[in-house]
Image 1 (cartoon, rainbow, N blue to C red):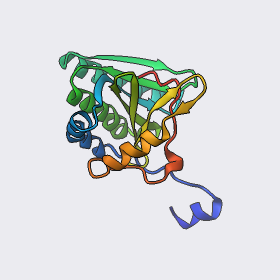
Image 2: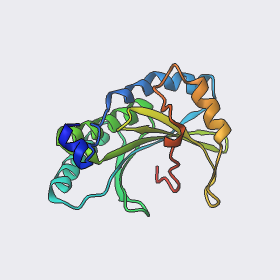
Image 3: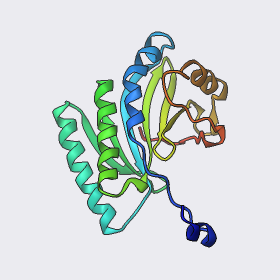
Image 4: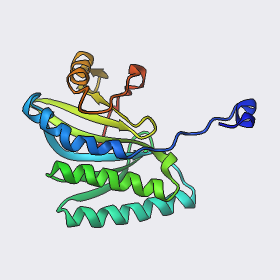
Length: 190
């Protein structure tokens, strides 16, 4: 931030970070073998909405690129807006590595096209019996946090389970240290 930015009260969005996503490739071993969480076969990238032609072009190009890659990996891509107006690229694939690669590819392409400031999060779905875990990666912070919804309608989450998971996986993934940034993604379409 420059002196003028500070004087005028302007802030800059930190650049999106995509490389920490690859830590998921090794973390899945611990998640499965020691904690019992299985890949849910879905992941997604959520984007801050934008209607300008620059963003629309970057989104279309990224969707085309990722769609081709998903087909090559025997997966699927779905693009949709959620109830809050956020744009989602949702990947379906049985292979965990493919989901990580597709999320990284989408994020990196947006970043390369100059639309990295639109990247909000990458979300990976895991399951255990009747529970769902979303591992959420914040592009701006370059860190993960867990979200375990318990009651979607009443907006209840398993805070203790999330804390336990973060403590057990502390050495495996870069975790968001500021708990106030562990935002729930209610109605997550992943």
